[in-house]
View 1 (cartoon, rainbow, N blue to C red):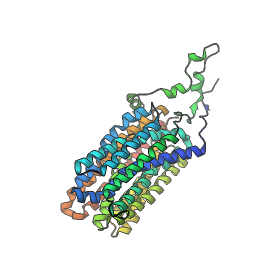
View 2: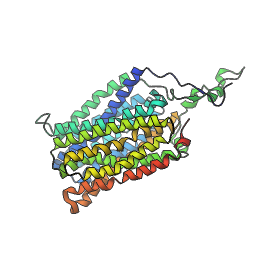
View 3: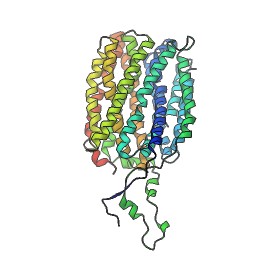
View 4: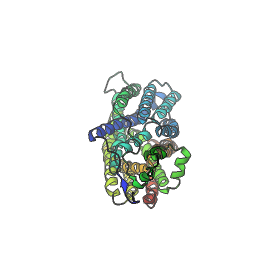
Length: 456
């Protein structure tokens, strides 16, 4: 008879080569996710000039137009992902958001562009939560933070490529007859081409197959001597139960660390998404740079700072988390506290090169939370609730981060313009940086209960 303190091993992991391919394809899709999302930040400069838009309208295009349905549809799509084939969901999502990205290039006014951005948000709603769940089922617990960190490199790399490519196309370096409209169309078509390759090469893994399961649970489900084998459900039946939204909330409501992490990450994202959207305009206005120079400078900040920060956060999360689960919250908390003064220093820089170099540091620190925190989310919910738990996080994080953060920085800039003129955006960013202090405090609080809330 099994004892209560032993555990049965998880299922055999897929081959290392195939897992590398899976992670690479998920990374590529995520990079397109942020490429299509971020390209509007650099194209905002020629879009604003051609369509005569205010900072308030740009904030709406970069914020709520994308975020509202992107966030709210993520929950029902994640519910579907916990019940159906996740690779199909990601494939369809990539096709839809790429198609709407291409449509952005045909917009003739604010409302047409707004509607196309809404469509991009609808498509991207189905990309992230199922991908988190797929990674959790392809990588064992001890390497999930690093796998999720590598996946999350799609954020800085996709964003950087979107900024640089958009600037090159719109600035005339690719072709004299190409403009901001062509940039949207080209990257949109590229995403549509990637979609069938993704579906044809990725298999749907067993849910929770790599998690270590208590042996007592398996033993209880074995038939007693003389009892029919069919009289009891197999061990997998526990994992195959399909919970509803209320079931997920019932579990998560008992885990305070989940909610402190969610709202801490959301405070970080309000500033993070806001800065990603507005810094190209900050470079153009405060330093009077052309779109191509701005694209290279900010693209370099995103690529170098973001990549290093995400990798560092994932490695530290896995290494330090072996000793204490608290480190999954403490590592990001420390990074957030260091991020605040560095953003102040960057916005106060007197030259564009100095500003870019200083922005590399807070860009990395501000993204270091992704690996350890996303890994923690996968362990704060049972295997059959992971997509839904991720969707709850994404709902709150993206509504506040994208929907509120991008708009608020634009609104602040509009309100400060009568006082500071072209420098209004500089002071808007400085005020918003205070959100990192709040994020750090919330993660500190989460560290006190995360070990008790962890799913063993």
